[in-house]
Length: 348
Image 1 (cartoon, rainbow, N blue to C red):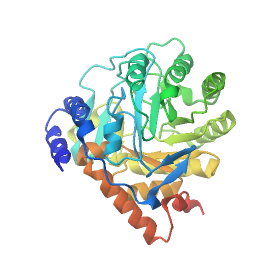
Image 2 (image 1 turned 45 degrees about the horizontal axis):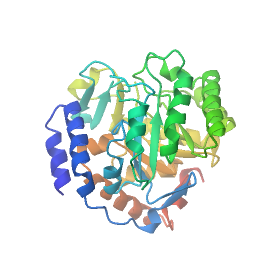
Image 3 (image 1 turned 120 degrees about the vertical axis):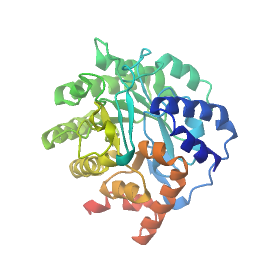
């Protein structure tokens, strides 16, 4: 596949240069890409009031400014999440800030919510034809004096273009942001955003994206607050500040670690959250997904949907079709009629 060859060439460039070039290439060639074959009906998932043709989605971080959501959907993803976007444009942290860990099939980033701001995203999405499931991931500016209000502003400006909106409070690269996961701060934040949703008369589903670096007590608090808030789901998880045994030269760099080393801890957090909330919330599994077996493990642990990003950087877009094929084979092997029947199977 020509685009996989292009992806392999991109990996010869420095990481952030490759990322920018990939977005430019997709922006230019996206409308010309052949649309992926229709998915097997057994992969379809209906959650959040939305119909997903398959449960494999693109995590936020790849397309921060919603430049190429439709190109990514054409590659066969079941949904795409763009962002994180902040109210005002933000340059992010100094370069270098993105590091490949080839030996570990991982990435460390300390990008710092670099994006062109919500107005630029809104202008771009205003001309988009609504096709496929699009999520928008909103955040707060680094220098904001009122971070909860930043989320209110982002939701108010962008929710009308989204099929769902994710409140991202778990990036490790904006100082103090993860403090919004604390019970009192989280209660206030979700109250502000849900009140804005009601004020605007919108029914756009709201999800919360949390970190993997939390203990059981914090999980209890988050589960309790989210259930009381009226939002619809949680994405588990963002990148980690933990450093398991890593082999790569860049392992010492600060920032959030994603990729293969994140799979086990993020899946454990997912399973623990499912045990707390049952089927009352939609859970989205993210972190280290690189195969159909990985996606299936997230689904059995309680995820209705799964997101990936880092593995695409290593394997190219051909990975999407392979994951779906492998996932369906596992679902059939275990006697499920469709992938939705396997959600939370490890808790049965």
